[in-house]
Length: 224
Image 1 (cartoon, rainbow, N blue to C red):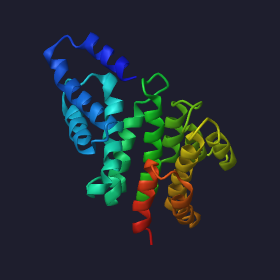
Image 2 (cartoon, one colour; image 1 turned 30 degrees about the vertical axis):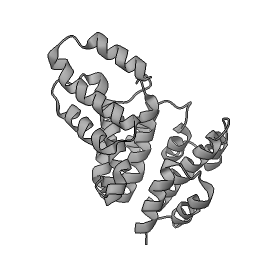
Image 3 (cartoon, one colour; image 1 turned 135 degrees about the vertical axis):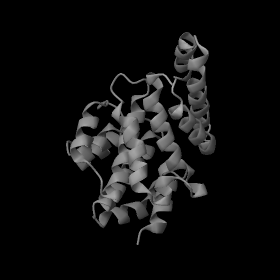
Image 4 (cartoon, rainbow, N blue to C red; image 1 turned 180 degrees about the horizontal axis):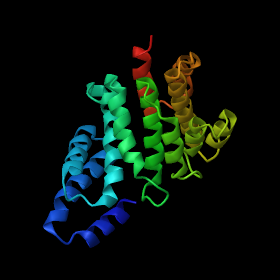
């Protein structure tokens, strides 16, 4: 995937104007994939502010910036971790609005939509109609589409976990962990006390290196 992006970029990079926004985008892309949330945030922010960033890269830049906001929680600076749920929801929404089935990284849109859902429910700004419309324009045949479908009201809980159990090796365990996390956040955000209990259970049921386990641990600390 990285090779495809770089190839496309070199074919398009015919002017100095293109290079500015694209260079910032690529700095963010590389930082994101090595786990450098600080650099990813600053680079994606700069790329989105650049007037010459090609429209092709704008959706992924928004999702990457929103993902960085989530992941930099250890520094207490990002919006979801800081409890700035409305602002976090806005960042995710900007990214997913332009995603569609032809996007070069369609799963980014799916995860971005889930990020929007768990942020917007806590902010009490969740737009169910908009969520369903956006979900319809994203892939429905790959993970984590079943979780998106559940939140959209088009799939049942047992269907989510049935799909999570597919795959080989550690994949089912990580998928179940993700399903538990997003469903727990969704439930809690909608006033269902079962959400807190499910979040608490992740400590025992999730792989210890699952990214969402870190998020769950952080959120449990601020849930009364």
